[in-house]
Amino acid sequence: MEPELEHVDCDLCGKDDSRPVFEGVTDSELGVPGAFDIVACNGCGLIYLNPRVPPADVHRYYPPGSYGPYQRENPLILALKHWFWRRDKRSIEALIGSSGAILEVGCARGDFLNSLSNGYALYGLEPDATAAAIAAGRGRATVWQGSFEDFTFPPELRFDLVILAFVLEHLPSVRVAFEKLRRLGKAGSKLVITTANFDSWERKCFGRYWHCLDAPRHYCVLTEATFREYARMHGFSVLSVTYSRVPNDWIGGIGRFCRARDWDTLARFFNIRNRAVAAAFLPLSLLAGLCKRSSRFTFVLERDA
Image (cartoon, rainbow, N blue to C red; front, side, top):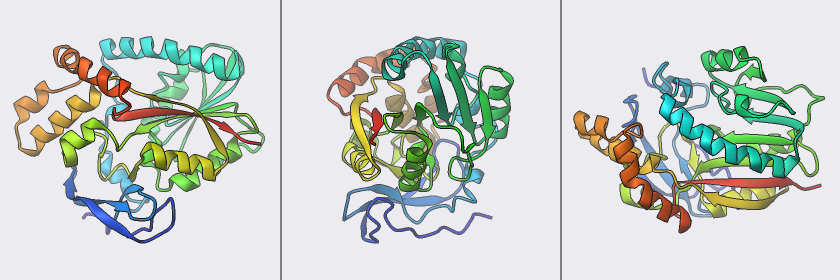
């Protein structure tokens, strides 16, 4: 039986005044039943799911073995990620130096954490028990299993850097998440947050089939303006914003469109692991990133005093 949906007010400004953006959106990625509405707040512009699956029931929409971040990576994709991570590691050193305490929220199988140098005290939090056990078993980091909104961190820990990569949109309240993130740091500590960008060419092209909409697993989708407002409200300064240049969401949008029409052969062809398809969409992805209209952006924030 599907869970009863709950009506919520806007998480950013608190108003209950919205207009429909997409109605009756279905899960064309994993095929979990249900139809969901995406709305835009008339007060602040936040895009969010309303009504939504209650947080206590949303685990039903992450079928075991099906949700991508929990699966073992294709060796080619993992090698490509390591290439990007070398750049990320240089950025981390520029932010906090060669030592300090780093927390990754939503660390999955711990691939990124385990790529970091030995100079850091590494910590991870992962809601999926199997992925958390794999990450902990690798021995480089202290990994806890639990949801960010409910987990109680050791009170003596204050992190120099907290990383959330495609996590914020899964949390039931971005406002509450920012409140907690502020408490986990100290003056001058850093946040690196990657999330989906609603003002993207991919979203305008694919509409309800946009890969980053991902209803009902994504409770909200941010724009640069709404993200900056959350940061300002909670005492964080924006140090930089970068836009992704990877082709994943062009390919994902086509795949979702095809699956919604039961074009299974085409859907299997339009897969990010198809190197020819990825190469074909790379020029468009590079252009979208340069124009600040790609589907993913990364904010680097600093906690104010």
